[in-house]
Length: 334
Image (tube, rainbow, N blue to C red; front, side, top):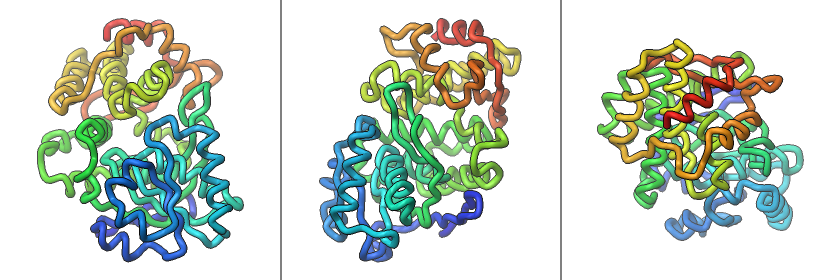
């Protein structure tokens, strides 16, 4: 099964397939970028091509590792026709994608996601980048992958905590644009993944470079989530876990702004808790700390905060100029 997405003038084909087919179809001259955990779990796959291995975790989405990947591509003799294959979770996809867009001013990118989060979200849509000390994903670009190969077999070696974190992004799709999806969360995984990819493609095709506001709905939970990641040092709280907490806080914010009924945050919290996801801000973090981090969020304009807020399951919109007092109240109730 193939799904085609468009990022500007660039087309991406998402192939729902098997690990063996991926291995057979990847160009022989490709250079794989992966992390230590994925390389160790799939040694036969890693041995098929030149491979650059980085440490696992958000800490690799920083300038030193980015530089190392670029230097490794040069040492491997990569030229402008050499595809870079981002083989891993969201961190690898962002890092390798940014490297592919930067090396020799751009070489072909192929995404082979191995985590649930990367399969349903970060591998599709072309947003790549790395973190700066000031905040998450503040250095990056839009780099459309030529192909995305999604093989759910890779999830067999994914740690349970990482799988649960990926479910946060799946649940997000239900609340922002497909309420009936929330009734299928315990079903067959492959069609669920395909459904989420189709939803992401629909939004990306409508707003490829996030200029119209439509694509911003994909950031439900992310403004607060990114602030939590930043405040905890990018590591103790996984991205999906931070987004889960963010969805609860931001649904409470929607109520405070008069956009949603009071029960919405309880509904969001219940669904997330059913899938083993955290719903409370970690101890030791203050609302003021998180607010300071949010001021650096990409949706903030002229110092005013913006949030993608759900009014009811299946409906979400970008809301700008959100008063900081309301944000502090939503955070204080968590």
